Length: 120
Image (cartoon, rainbow, N blue to C red; front, side, top):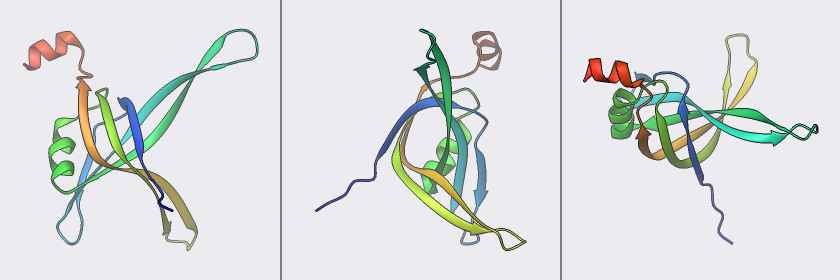
């Protein structure tokens, strides 16, 4: 039986993307993405809950979107979940869950209107 590992997110960048090159010369970009939902608080009202996602792009997508996107931009992400394990200098093992994006679309620019007009 087939399985499916697919994630679709719409949210806002928490910071400008960080771009780096691997030892093999491949481009990697990563950024944090915030998604929000409202949950009942038990008192008849709702409270906003923010979930943070680590988004990773590779290759041409990393080069293009890593330079085009900036903090506050609203984006659509289509990708898959990956859990990566690594060891720190003290030998402690850590796990991190990432979204490996294969499709990104900027839905709106996070730049305030006045600043956007100045920057063109």
